[in-house]
Image (cartoon, rainbow, N blue to C red; front, side, top):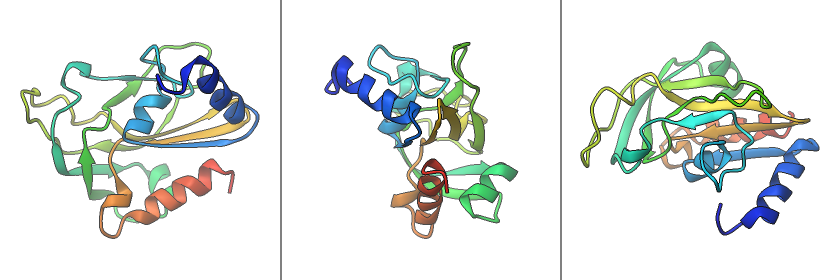
Amino acid sequence: GKTLGDKGREQVRAFVKRGGGYVGVCAGAYLATNDYSWSLGILNAKVVDKQHWARGVGDVAIALSPVGRALLGHSEERLSIYYYQGPLLAPGSDKQLAAYDTWATFAGEIAKKGAPKGVMIGTTAIAAARFGKGRVVCFSPHPELTDGLAGLLHNGIAWACGK
């Protein structure tokens, strides 16, 4: 976000607002929020427990919502997915931005490196929203690094493209 600078962040915002799609995975999900000075501000989300962002890596359980299952094309509610310190998302309070839809929440947790237990479960793992005429979808965990789950990312991209 800092490397993009003000001008680059505004170009991304303008692209999405005009009808473009944004897909953020892990750090890209942090970037989409409106919670940092370097954020894009295209997802009305705050990051929970910023102090322990480096909470560890490994497989973690997520629970897909009915909407998430339908749009991501996966029939199972619970999945094990690879997590690499992505954001724990919660709804933001920006009145200028639409609320996001929760496509999945964390049903398990990783609490290493001093991160407290009990914080991760229930936070948003996959979020989606409209931004202007465009669409934003953010994955905290990594479907593309999890055997058999790359289709989640493919379907998220298709949704962000308006398909």
